[in-house]
Image (tube, rainbow, N blue to C red; front, side, top):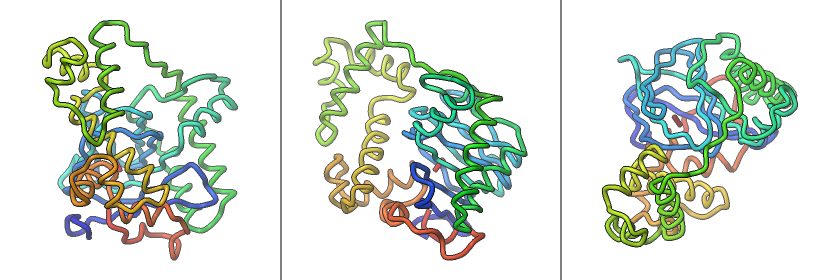
Length: 292
């Protein structure tokens, strides 16, 4: 099972008639997601067990009838909150989809998002499950309709404008500059000491400022950024080994390890799933090797 514990299963896929949305149906017991971010939103409806996850610096829990909500670019983790693990159906809608729904239903113009990491709304959770089932059955009208209904419902109860403040302090400005350097030199990044010297600050001051600004230290952020860039390369049809080299991982096994810890499935399975097609039959999550 691609390194998954016995009894764990996951299927990460796309339904071609629901563009801009990824789907994950998984059961995890010993799986632990590394601190990571998504470029999309995350709507994770828990159907069994409990998922625990760090959202920023807060440890929260979500159980049956609840939905874990994560905004784009928000650091979070994921692991079992009970010994038997957790089962969930997750939707990853593109940010523009959510913001267009917010503008259409609530007249929110700008960076709309969610103000709570967990909502207790069994009806909304059933709607998320309904999106999955409609996609599995090839019912495009229902899948699209239910996605819009659940997004609008959750925006009404826990939505608002999420506008990041511009970096004002010297430390925040240095963190932003350090991020630009790391993005531009991802395959051959400088050491922390050299990076700090380039920015005319001390290593510890830069480490602290980066952590305060982006929710993780530079080396963790770089690993997450490499995985995100690798995803885009895989989406474009680049082979996993070539994607690994392009983003600065030492080899494909290095990419496999970090990719699976962040996305929930290995790069090859992810690329095949993004290649599309609905599952062979309605119901189960399939057996693709397995995101928090």
